[in-house]
Image 1 (cartoon, rainbow, N blue to C red):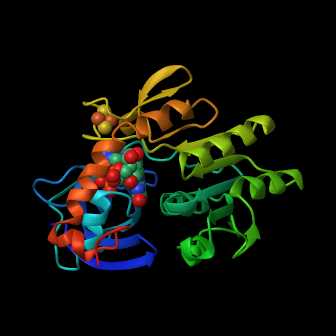
Image 2: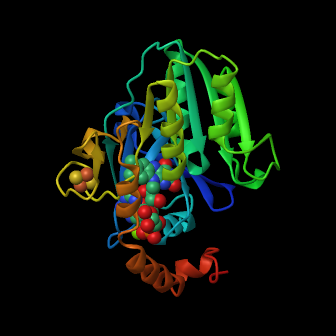
Image 3: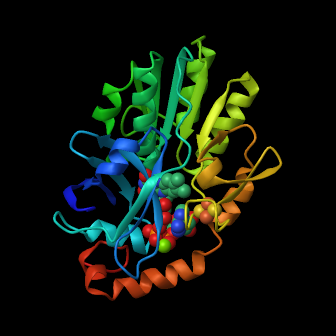
Length: 287
Ligand code: FAD
Ligand code: FES
Ligand code: MG
């Protein structure tokens, strides 16, 4: 169970792994995620199911190294097994034929956007995808995104590839040139999702965002993933992770995501000294 069958580095600090998980692959629907532990004493982290193969009984995870657990997972090799994998969790994306759906993915948000655009296309929508990163070398899954989009627009903040600028500007230009847009789905760093929601509010365009609060159990019991939506407290894991972007309190989410920065840094420094820590390229340490 939960054996790593394939593993590749698909960008700087970004990994993709295919994991054996038959029941999860069969039950999964776009927008859902898993919570995994790499080893017995390891912490639980949520990752979106970026793809699945129900016949083979596999799921694909794509993750960016940001701290101890994502670095640790990055050092695991084909043939190793995850300690446990719980899912699929969260409410699936509401998919129907809306008309024209624009998917906006920034940075690692491109991975969770992929299954949603795939689902939206299969439901008969005209899918326009806008994906972006800081610079060309940080772009990934562009060919996969092209296959699940009728139109793919790529931007980089520094202009090293595609359109020079932020994904929000690309979206604004698309709307301003008269493209009929019925729904926007935005996934990426919190400031990006906030900027997309602020933009589309002005055009009265329905906008779904996928939130990434800190999660522990993923089943509505611990309360770690509290977010405020429309003035109400909701749990990201069971009420989301997708919410109406126009109602989300992004500032509160930003504060809550930074709650454990101190301990996370201490843990990363400790990990650096371990055998696995030496195997990876943590800035300022490792091999
Ligand atoms: P740490 O150093 O522990 O934390 C770095 C930062 O990550 C923290 O400051 C905090 O903001 C956030 N974080 C820490 N622990 C958690 C936690 N238990 N849950 C959520 N956030 C946390 N990342 C991907 O790269 N790919 C994905 O497909 C993906 N999907 C996600 C889906 C959901 C529903 C959620 C909630 C998050 C998703 N994330 C994804 C974010 C990923 O879970 C965090 O990057 C990861 O937990 C960081 O753990 P760490 O130990 O490596 O880093
Ligand atoms: Fe515990 Fe959502 S992660 S309630
Ligand atoms: Mg951690």
